[in-house]
Length: 544
Image 1: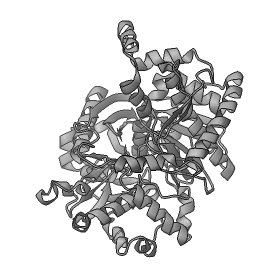
Image 2: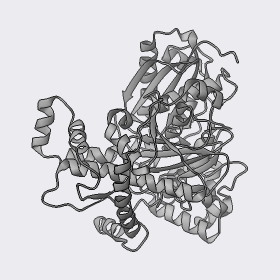
Image 3: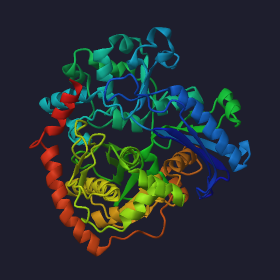
């Protein structure tokens, strides 16, 4: 197969910033990188508990700034750019008008929170998610098997129900509700598309598979089926062409008009092509603000607590299985911001290292179980396998002798135990995992994470060959959409990949963690499966 010479651009939109890369289309080598933080970040001030909003203008300006920087640092010609791809957190969406402009720009809706962009981590729709699940169970809806048996508050459907109930004026005025990834593709191309990834995982809509129906939606709330009329655009598969760069955006970006633009993708899912994985048996684990666990399999198997199982959702020809944990690096950041003593901060400053590096160094000297601590990593709710946003974090075993590094290590162990529970749910359903692949900033900054994950799960773990992860994955989607390769799998094999060396589980540590995991699982089930429903009651009390 003769590949084209040239380069592609990939842009990854995270929770706090955007990251763009320019990659060689023949081998995935990164030629330039650009980053831009969102000016307004996550917006929570003045909002009810559980709310998390963002400004779509931040994303558009960051798209332009990140691409410009990546292009300038790459030192390639505009004519060499053969495609653009992007990914974004989901479900992060906004209501738009007939011109596909944010409804929040209108003076009449400036004071309407539901007219603004709701972030993936917006958990204000927990009550709606429970109602959607209850009606689906009563009606024996087949689509429940595709989402782990429970509707999650992070998806678009419950958030739309929240808007439908609380602000019917916004709901009626919106011409459409659009994922930020699809919105940015529209800004690049002038064409409305509906990415199969966003539709399948966040709206439970996938042709040829059990999906939400008008009758089901109206059974939840009369008239709620109107959400189906507020989906405007042509369906677009992952790694396929969405449209072409408009002359206006080409001038803004310093590129050539008519460059192919790939359909939008979910941020975590873009790590699949970046890993080069095109066959089952490997789970890609993204270690970032939150943690996502992704794998592909040729057949459908209902996995408990899966965040979504969608045919062709990550790689054509396979079912894409997503699970995850709502808190990851942000849990450790919370601890560092709020619970590290002054002497540790001074030591880190004197040594010229970060407080995370200091705690990692000290925690590495501990053996499994030495701290006497167990942590439930539900600091932002539980995504998998319990799918319950009303669960909260727990640190068990604190004494007057407990040191910060012990808590820090126990938090990492708690995240690893959560992943082990996810792996066991997959194995029980018939989706076996033989290897882990790590992506995200933590995997390149913190070797202790990888060793603990290997020791807890008993599986080897390799990092993605490129630290750019999802941004490279979006560039690979752009390569497929530009027809440089016959399909996304071929592009992934040529441009993606894993490091050759693996972090292997240490037998002694694995045996110790097996004992700890059995205790952790008892704690997990007691608080998470109903025998000790204390956490939800505490949340209720805090809102009184």
